[in-house]
Length: 114
Image 1 (cartoon, rainbow, N blue to C red):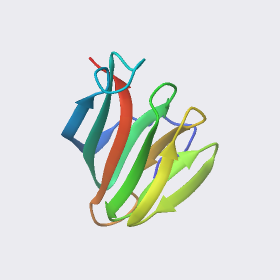
Image 2: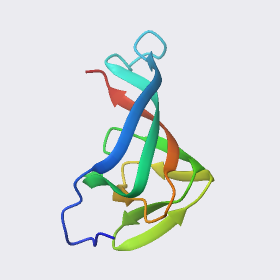
Image 3: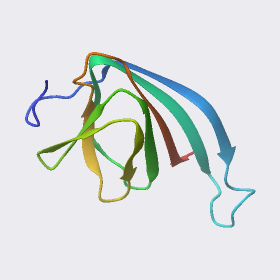
Image 4: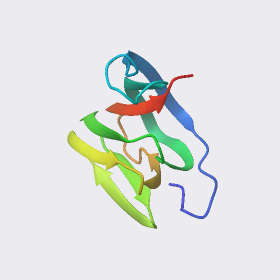
């Protein structure tokens, strides 16, 4: 387990882009933005960090398998299968899998196109 005072470098995490949609042609004012869906797999003992925010990158997470611990403002919240958490402009967090099985989430967010 990693505490909120240490570095939270990503390790043991696999990120797979499932699909994306260029929002520019879809919604006025959204040029340069895309809606993306990713599958993120976190091995037991893994960390998805470092501590980061979601300014300009809102999203939602759904847990498919295992448990992911979301660390925000010194509070650790455990999420199992089902609806996870929103990631909005007030979100500053890092994640870890404290369990013994891989944790899998689907993350959908709006990001700037690279």
